[in-house]
Length: 86
Image (cartoon, rainbow, N blue to C red):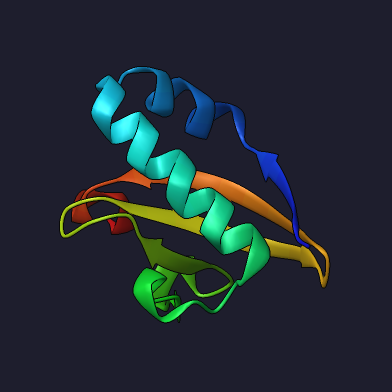
């Protein structure tokens, strides 16, 4: 099982979201923790300024950017729509 570290900016942005979306995000994080390459999450490596990071989908609009700290630990760095890639 993967250990999750939450970046402060991730926590701040998470708190601003509506309760239904928060619930969906928490479900996807749990899914990610148990099966990190789950097909529903569409995990993929990023490039450009985020070349050391990966992303997975919450729904059609929201994404989470994360980075592997080691093989058992992941840092969730950002949450938002496609604008988080800019």
